[in-house]
Image (cartoon, rainbow, N blue to C red; front, side, top):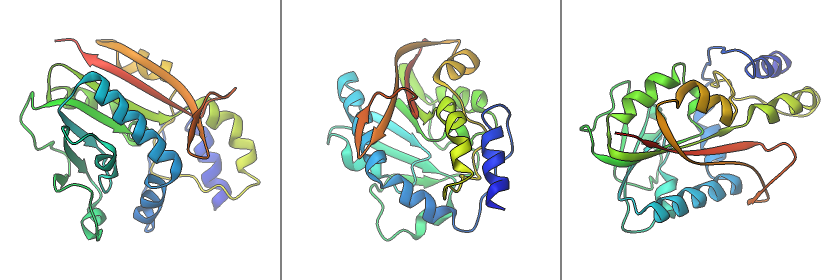
Length: 220
């Protein structure tokens, strides 16, 4: 069964395959979001927000809101997620976390920034999501997207057959930063693109980088 999921994970480099959630999904997400690599990424986001002098941010797919722990005190944080298990957490890192089904419960133009950290690969229609989130941004508000790099997934898929790798079955498709920009961001201004890997909690540049980060702006 694991081998089948590994093969499907490899195919998601090329095509979209509908994801499914297993019973242990919440435990897996919690472990993932709190490891050293994820904390390193949260610190990157914090630096970007500080440099851009932003105030209100929406963390879409926030899990327990751990990002809020690494933000400056002058940044007002809101998080949304569709995982009902989050409300069972003994500790959430923000009081402003909402569980949603589809509708995003904020007025238009409310936020300065939307963060999509390890979310876009889990979405069936990324273009629609970005358009809906754009409505919640003020004029010239910015997005931050972080996601696994499909080139990395392609080259390491063979090894994954033999190691203990268990794919995240909620993934729909893997992307590259170039693919994201060409498919979904034609009407946005790209501010920065970073391709990188993380080893032992430190950001590094590798021959085949495992992740990418895109910062882009709402034009109007």
